[in-house]
Image 1 (tube, one colour):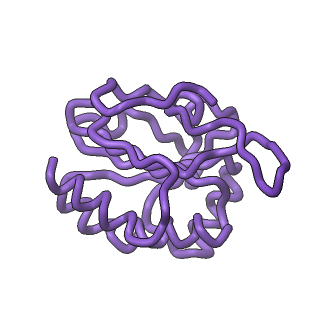
Image 2 (cartoon, rainbow, N blue to C red):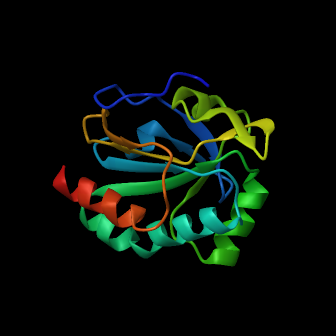
Image 3 (cartoon, rainbow, N blue to C red):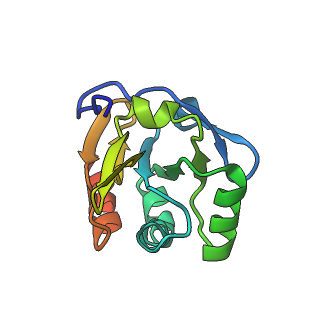
Length: 156
């Protein structure tokens, strides 16, 4: 796995396709807090629960001057389907090249039932208004996670 970013680091720049046919870049969120939740695959149970939790809190995040985006390696079509099917309110980034995933250190070797494969480690990153990483949640457990991230964003 690529070396993960650390709290205090300047957040890596990124440019990825979005589920709506546009692009998402780090510069789009300049001057605001930004939560990026990286998830393994659209329309899977854990990823659906996590995405719905962040969507449910979208207004509270906005009140805390914090944008929220979800990012996976899924295609824009898969992300658009996921967002529509689950009625998600947060934008979804599509990093099929894995460039952003590698820059944030969330792409690497995983293992399931002894089978090794490359994939995304469920991770959330909170970036402050100054463009620096304020906090990282590696290997996220979904239950209560979005609320914990909201509390951290409100404290910035």
